[in-house]
Image (cartoon, rainbow over all chains, first blue to last red; front, side, top):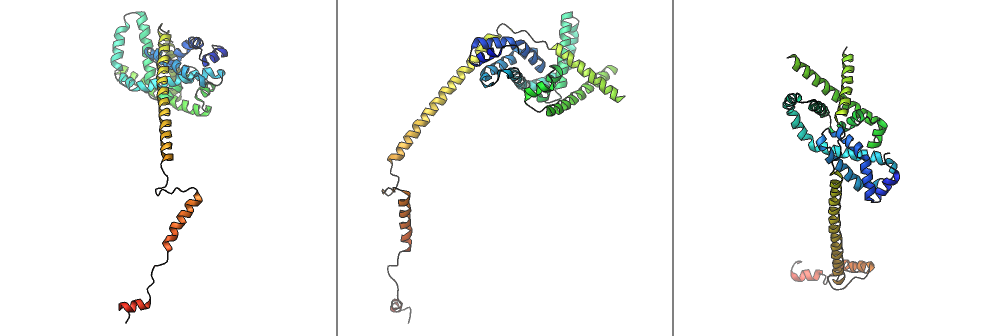
Length: 195
Length: 122
């Protein structure tokens, strides 16, 4: 826990200063999770606001302060899920324009080391975003929490309130689909280089 | 051989996920984050306040309408004939009387003499 139980209790009672402290304590962790879940840095702050807004209005429903972190994770996952669903169509359009974007990025890559580093990061984000679009939004989030966030099955069980075996099966299937898309993408790149 | 390829792609995918983790750094909060958050909280609070007010008015209005209807029912006579039925037993009795009238005796019974007088029986 990043804060004392007492602080959470105070925030539950409507203490604005305590709520501010809770937000400040968890902001970095929450922003990081959101960044990895949605893969779009420009939207992270907006989703984070939605998470803390939902936290403020649902804090009174939290029975035990010990469950706060799992509760916050659940709120983060839900907000990221809503955001991804809302922007899925936009993302699909973006994938269609990817080759043009990559061309532009390649031209810009020569400009400076910082730009090159930033471009590479963006390229990785877009590649993973494209791969994860081969699974449903629910599976995308689950897979990201496991593979990127590094959450254990026990942690996921707490966040989702679901059976460990059911999560295992779902994770396995989602990973297999992403792996298939990954292999397909690699073959496509090799064919493109060979021709 | 194919298995080896599969395991390699598994490893490469793991590597890609690790790189993705590094590529998605947590951005720093902008200075306006907390004020904007509190603005959104207050905006939602005021919206919910308006809804609470409106629902309060609806509750009061429906309570008043119920009272008016109840009063109207109490003041209006419940029986259309003007003879109010006091109890369930009275209602049954009244109904029984009405039923009983269906089996009233005929006012006049024709006899054979009547028929013969009318020329039916010769």
